[in-house]
Length: 359
Image (tube, rainbow, N blue to C red; front, side, top):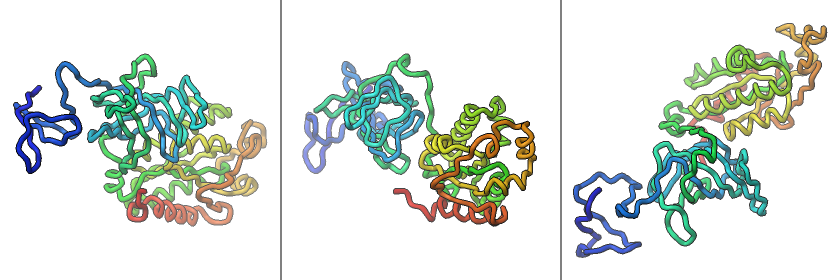
């Protein structure tokens, strides 16, 4: 609380009053500290305050908006870290309304969304023709990705009580510290193609070059993160979903993540790409079935042929090779060391800070 002690204007006598739309300096008593984006208001007419906000979004980015995505809400000169707590209804440009919740907002889509702002937001609700509540969502590089006028507070009971937080360290600051961007390189291929071997050797090469890198190997994950899952199609899909979610979290925190999973179907890999987003790069470790079966380092093909592993990929279940992988490694024709060296060069070229400029 403070009182208005006076006004100041540039190169003119101090006025005794200020009107809406006028640019003035306000002298307060006591001399309180005013932060960028703070609002001044009469005690009888406070703005709204909420940590969960209803917004009517016009999404401009080429990538779809999804629940859990984190951005900055810019409201006038104020900026607040926010995350998407729920997508309550989607309306396409053509006018097709899909109420009752959705998983994503497509590019150029309109939607009612719930935003979570951990520190709370002071705002006037948006009204057509008025100035209040005119927010926009921006990314870590200050690109405006969507218009998000604020309609009012969101009731806690209207959406699940999930409050995804945002890191106090921005992605661009992590990139500057590491010298590279976070990314996910998703290796797919038949069992025995050499995915894990190439992934580990690539990890060592990149680490030796000063990069923050980690491998998510299918067998290692199944002993910890997904030890409760079997090998049915549904369980395999859930295994990939969890792996993609963890990979995205790691990439968001600046790591180069290399996954090594068979991920046999195009639909499963498309799901992983959707979860990871723009940081996803598909790596096809190409080796034909005969080559992989001849190697059979774990004896899995022999067990499958003997009927002890029903539904084994390549024998009892199909493998759908990528039609347009981002990177292809000819693992049947070159040794793992050569594939790893090639993959390390490609990864470094794609994520090194000095070689990529955000747009």
